[in-house]
Each structure stands twice: as structure tokens, then as C-alpha cells.
Length: 248
View 1: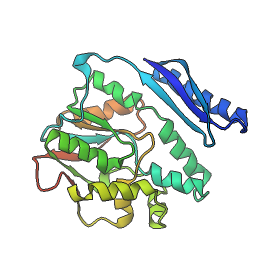
View 2 (view 1 turned 120 degrees about the vertical axis):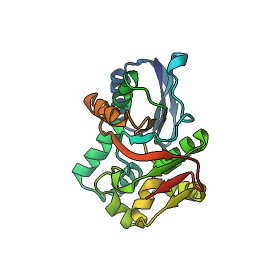
View 3 (view 1 turned 180 degrees about the horizontal axis):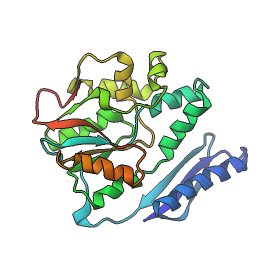
View 4 (view 1 turned 30 degrees about the vertical axis):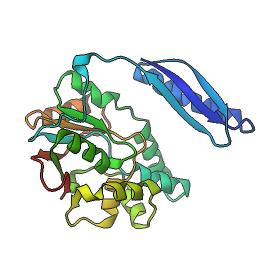
């Protein structure tokens, strides 16, 4: 697997900042096992950084978000609430410990959770990013023609996210997610702040995994053994019902 830096950076800005950004990217590329082979830089008013990644996968090892099966358990591999806390961090509304935890969550590679897929057969996988937990669960449910029932008390949420949501510190993406997918979601007696977090867009979120119920506990233990920051069963796959997603 190879990666290339894609950088937009103002030429008038401190180049030491750019050096730190590139070093951080290099460290994560190296940790992932990929090879950094160059990149492109553009003079821009606003700093932006990303990676263009190319690789190969064996046809028998492709994991889809469209193959979840009725009876499966749903496993999540990172706590949610990153979007709300990032918004709060920009306004200096959270303490240093919370900020550190948010950053540690974002820089943690899904590589460690995914290592378990070599040992345990899973049915369906997706990642949780801009569409939030509910948006990506909906993609899995629709593509697999099933319904997914989530247990709200089991969903891991970063400390501080609920307090910030109650204060109305909400990224614009949450409102767009809610507007777009709420018609396919049934939420039962859950406070508004928690509901907002379920729609919250995640930056570098975890994996959402659909696995046979008989293998779910084993998968959770194996993920934690491999160093995954979190691994928790949060729901069940059901026959297609009135709503694709139910949260209780």
C-alpha cells in the first residue's frame, strides 16, 4: 500500500507548522504499514492536509457494508462524540484532558480492530465518519435489506460530549445528517442531547461491524487483545421492518 501527501498551505504561514503536520502524517502512514511516496503542495489561504492512498486486496477478503445478516450482533470500535467535542475545542470550551482524549481517539488507527478479521469471520463492515453512527448504520441496513436495532445505553460516548450537546455546541453536519436520514430512524424516549450525538459527524471514527451472534463476544475480546481503543456490542440485526434503524 502506498500513500501520497495532499497539502494546501499558505506560503506566508510558519513552515514549522507544516513540518509538524507532515511529520504527523508520516508517523501514521508508517504505523499503518504503508509507504509514503511523495505528494503535492498547493499555496492556499486555509491549511488542508490529507493522504491519497492506493493498495490491493485479495478478492476473497473484500468486506462489504451490504452483507449484514439477520441475527447478527453490531459491534463498534471507537466511542462517538468527536464532532461535537471538536466544535467545542475550537471555542476553548473543554479542558486539556478531554482535548487529549479526543485527539487520541482520532489518531488511533482502525488497523488494530481490523486485525481480528484475519481470525474471525465477520459478515459486514463499514467505518463511521461524516454521516455519523446512525448514517453509516443506515447505509449498512439499506444495502443489506435488514433493520438494525441499537441499544443506546451500550453505545460508548466520549466524556464531555453530552454536556456540550446540552449547551447547543453542535456542528452543522449533525443537522444535515438528521434532516437527511431521520425519516428512516425511529428513536424511542431518548434525550435530545444523546440523539444529537448519534447523528454527530465523526472525524476518523471507528468501525461498525456486523458479526454472527455466536462470534460477537469472541470478536470483542480479540479486538481488545489486538489493541483496539474500544470494542463493544451495541445492537442486533433484525428482519426488515418499518424503519431501517431503531434506537431504544
